Image (cartoon, rainbow, N blue to C red; front, side, top):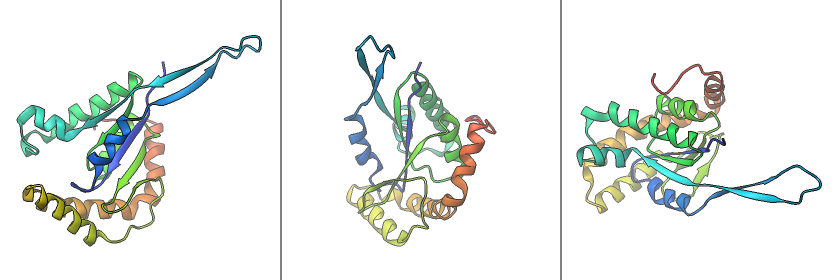
Length: 195
């Protein structure tokens, strides 16, 4: 059985992660195979379905709220278990959450050590990168995300945006020197999603 591929968004609330993720569903991963027999010209394609797993959707399903601090551990337990189950079923998955800490990065890598991380910066394209030079205008990103939150009537996101901006700035600063070390730990099963 083919295991699916994991893609993960990283970014502030209102940075465009969910908007960008909609294009993910429009595409399918097609892999061509041959029987390997030189006398047989029969080739075929396998189309791997794609799905998005959003922590926000799990929160809404459980409580009807966008955030509830009392159930965050439970939400993330469901989130990472769903990601792993979908990957094992052969589906390509886009994990749509802020992923603003090394703990969340490690949990994703425990699901798929080859996870592709896509950084979402407002006003710019999505970066599909494994190397991230220390990234620049955090204050500008915060301002844009807060404006989007205000425009959508979600001013309650302001303190969350501020807190996560600090986490993401630290994550970006450490990214280049640490991501491959974390991948290696995942490949060697040094941690798992229940830690």
